[in-house]
Image (cartoon, rainbow, N blue to C red; front, side, top):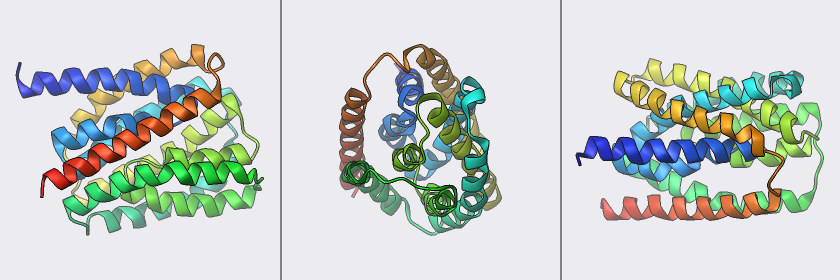
Length: 247
């Protein structure tokens, strides 16, 4: 079995699973895919591929939850997030591949205590707070491959739940990712090969997202949160291991 066929089988299977899981809890798609993508394509191209794949994934969630989406929150969030994404993407291209890989791994592991702390605070935020959140997460989105796990507590704290949360978070992330792709193209980071790989993987993720709608309300949130923390920890350690191995 050639490396090409092996990579297609592994990434295609992971894409389907990631699409289902991301469609149910609103994040996790790129977390599952990241270690395999870094292994096959390296950290720099991984960020580009994930930008394409995540765009398709979020688009499919917006379509699934269109009626429940809070477009006012999405607008306020995106007005500051989009320019911040451009700033973050320009920061990304100044970093070397090994550093990017280490940042991705550390970032995933750090999300576990950050999310737990945010949930324990049980805070409520207003509409204008979402503009501040958009700026901060937009900048991070330009640098790292995934920020969905950090997004989650803020959208929930605004009062969005279930379909409203899934649709609004997906729409907000979608606009950020489109901006990120545009900036990557202008910087010469995004090439035809990365676009092709991202589109192929995105089709698998979209299929998983469509399947996820039937089980959104079937499984308890706590179990999925525990599962995602395990996935985040394993993925982060895996990427850091690859980073150390390459030295």
